[in-house]
Amino acid sequence: MAEVLAQLDPSEGGKYLDGTVGGGGHAGAILDASTPSGRLLGLDRDPAALALATSELARFGDRAVLVRANFAVLDEVAGAHGFVPVDGVILDLGLSSIQLADAERGFSFFARGPLDMRADPDIRVTAAEIVNSWSEKDLRRVFAEYGEEPEAARVAGAIVRRRVKAPFEAADDLGRFVAGVKTRRPRGIDPATRVFQALRIAVNDELANLESGLAAAMRVLRPGGRIAVISFHSLEDRIVKRFFVRESRDCICPPHLPTCVCGHRAGLRVVTRRPLRAATAEVDRNPRARSAALRVAERLP
Ligand SMILES: C[S@@+](CC[C@H](N)C(=O)[O-])C[C@H]1O[C@@H](n2cnc3c(N)ncnc32)[C@H](O)[C@@H]1O
Image (cartoon, rainbow, N blue to C red; front, side, top):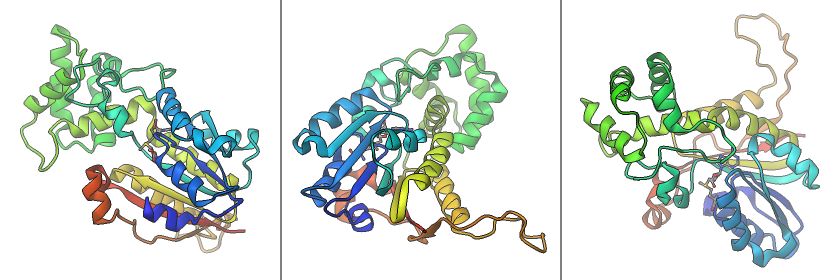
């Protein structure tokens, strides 16, 4: 939180966009820091999260505008609500503690609820449908690519054999099954962590949304405005890092070409060469912050 505020430096009269408003924590802090006239457009694809943000931010009156939307199209939403250009954009990726704790959403391998994992009820495919109907090859690819799961092939094969007899319905059933199939115990995390991460990314199309959201943020930022992105795993952090590096270059031609043919112009300046980590005091208060990586870039004219 402190690092985000220091980097975005919200000021009176500024306009800000929180693409992942969640419980309204960052949004409230930005609105407090831009008192009395700063405004914030907060988006979330999850109606339950948006309802929570609405009550958390009610004290700011019409300084906070909340919309249920995917941040992949944040430029369209910002345009429709008069938030272009904006002075700062924040994306705090992943799930909120409230979503993780809700057994009915099926995000946690301890949850007895259905194997669902949809961040947005309008999404058509659930985690149960993926696990019970995708081919072994596709499951292996998802576990390997989105979970970086070293035993992707073993887990995919075992799931396909088991589901013929008993399809997976509950999240904790899959959690226990994956833990039992794996031969190696990763240190410090539950054995099912990577498989669950992979399913969540696949259900919610998280990586494609991130790519689109970063490009959309560039289109709405005013020159000198900043984008701050907090990611919680290496796949997301790599996408953010590569996007910032590419957009901070004047030419993105392959290195073997003698002269530039792409005509690409730098639109960003990278502010954080290395990701910023949460301070010890914040990690003590909120242990999930230990894996958070914050990257910041500034829009060039
Ligand atoms: C880690 S929480 C954000 C917490 C928030 N920054 C706070 O301070 O309370 C992430 C939120 O982003 C939302 N989210 C994830 N992907 C999204 C997307 N593509 N578009 C809109 N919201 C998204 C989730 O529903 C969740 O509520």
